[in-house]
Amino acid sequence: MTITEIEPVTRKKMRVSIDGEPAFVLSASEAEEWDLHEGDVLTPQEEEQLRERIARKAGRMAMDMLLRRDYAQEELRRALVKKGLAPQYAQMGVQYVDSYHYLDDMRFALEFLSAHMNTMSRQMAVYRLREKGVEDSVISQALEQAGWDDIAGIRREAARRYGSVDALLARGEKEIVKFCQACARKGYRWPEIRSVLQEDGQDNP
Image (cartoon, rainbow, N blue to C red; front, side, top):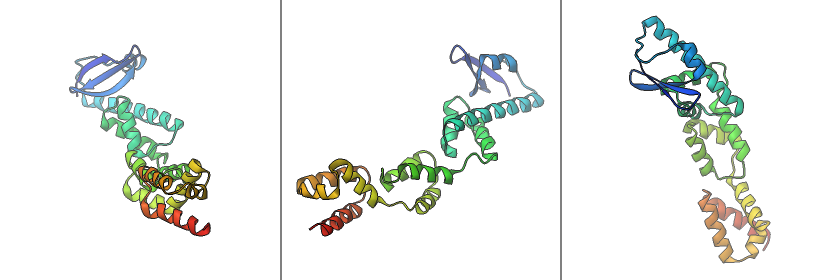
């Protein structure tokens, strides 16, 4: 292992490259404390010590991020990479907080669904959770546990736009088509949209 480059990122941060690849970012004070220099060739013992230091730093970074908000595991790993950690060191940070059970993708998915219940479609919720790195099997279980129902979301959308489904129906076909198109763009499926319109139409002939 060779320290191939130490370059400034900002006035107070330095990026360290190992064997030609960007590895991690240090504050100026950490760079001085760790006593790293370009061209240093580390012994096996020094390599192990450096890995331990990086792992502790990655763990602290991950913990600081979780104090601000919850993350899915893959989402946290990506965020650590964006902060300057090489993927293998970002994974160390994830493993550190996961060892204390601070990460739980099922809990994360359920909390996400609870926060967005009736405000987005099932399709959009699945897309957003996938985007955060949650696996499909976890998403499916979470949706089932949460009792996700697009019907309530469609009714809420009608209430937000028109006051109620009844008021929408009273506006006539042109406005109903416009509403259906808006719901479809949000990921709501036609069978559920039709169900809402038909049920309320039958209740209010």
